[in-house]
Length: 583
Image 1 (cartoon, rainbow, N blue to C red):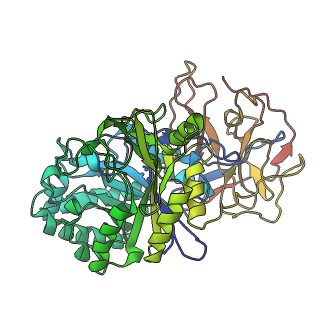
Image 2: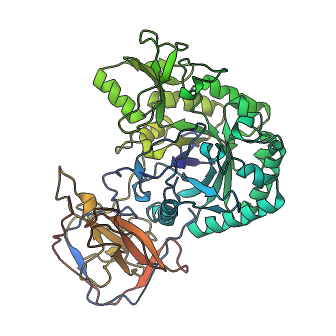
Image 3: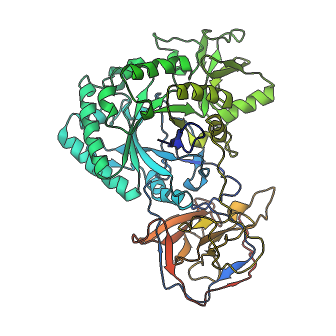
């Protein structure tokens, strides 16, 4: 069972020696993609200085990109998946097309929501709905990736309208049926492959739980599992590492109702401990194998199959402000959470990238806790615990020794533009970085049918200074003597003329009708596609706000294939691109 869950949720696949999976949590975020992946939604190469000019119209078109599709990605959710603590993270923004190629096998879009009055599942927010509608584009270039949707999260059970929603649903057969019907409808509409239930936490009084939740959650998950099997969807659920909350899960009864458990093996300690009598204001690591192992041991004592366990990793650390800067060891007193980072902007937490910048800037030396498989570093009156490739390797070794095959990360959007975290984690897990498909052509020449060099059913965007690959044709822009292209992704201050990205589809298939929509003369663009179309890309040209949408007609008769008949006298002609991106 290979899965990479990015929570979103991602699971790593095709591990060397031992199968592993990485789950990634997708929060709504915008990161730069790898150099050869454009910011067009379908992520494709960019930049051929020769173009296709359409002489005659396309007869019929369809773009089939409705695929079974968290960190938040039904395209990305604008809410943040929060595992265990009251304040939401402040993620960078990430669009679906900016997910690094081949690094994850699963994405968990976190979160959709549930109406506390009607008990119906829905996107809940226009931005979430918009991102959900875009998520299929990921599968244009990576057809085998699985995209799930998560419901719940820490804040869902906070004091407020939804604090008892899970309990209200699980305790009533009628409410459960309403919820399940709406969930299946939402999953089918947006093409989700599975659902992750993040109930934090049943039967816990301080989390607005009820004693009867212990039994009700089993009944609820059993019904959910039956419905997911009927619709050929996957199902997972979150488990805490804290015994205080874990004891309220009948894990043995729940095991048969899920494909896997997502273990929140991070955020074990943080600034929330300071006013808690049972923990207190003391320095402590937010993720360490000593605490994690206690939770795993409870699973093993109940004969839980380790293949059904996905171990969580974090792309951030938890920080404290020391009461005495001279006392920075475990157990020293703290006065508050650590200072917020420039990017994370949250008291008590720092992205890994911020931690490494501080270490480099101040010439610090981190301390490795080999037993806990965690690192710490202190400076001035600040202290932070975190992971890196070395501690991930230690954690992965311990997990694999217990036959755990799945790994989850929170959150994809907290990585840097070089993808330092996910690449480091994959290397620690024994996975080699996947080679991006070769879309290049050597000379400017007509794009004609040749042996396919990549999967023939997938349309793609080209990379900067690259054209359509062998066996592909550039897709014309409907109504214009130009092709579908984007120059903005190839432009930055250091290299203002880096070519363009071309939208390419297989020559042996029918070519879709495509165009750019959403441009406004005011610069306040309104990205959207017409009914019957699917969004396959985006560009910022002419937009001071939002972006334009690349829209292609789509027909349900095609699966993961862009298709349309093309007239025989469709020809290739050289054409210079003088489209300049806005600064």
